[in-house]
Length: 108
Image (cartoon, rainbow, N blue to C red; front, side, top):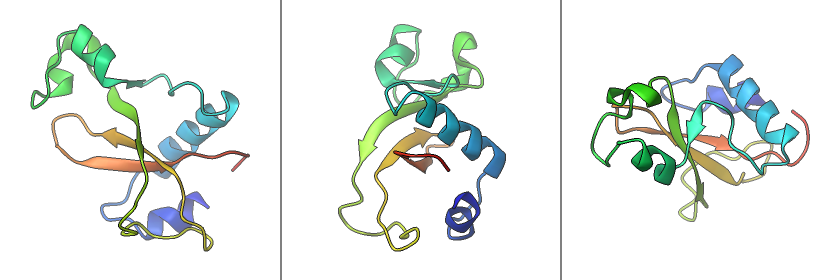
């Protein structure tokens, strides 16, 4: 499933990283973000501000902002095995781009 989703994305994402993220989400039943993610409120409390490179805050180097829900109401994202996934966003530090990760309810 990860590879099938990645084939449709541009730019491609690191499949091993995505697998680790999905496993982390599955292990907490989607109740906790994976370790490298912070919510916007947490990032702000550590000194980050919207429009600023997240990694410019030393305590947030290597982290990504995540946790916001995205519903794909316009239907622009690809279907995976015929289903439209519920997605979690991750804004890549300093690039202003977002990656979207399916929220899984069962294993990979």
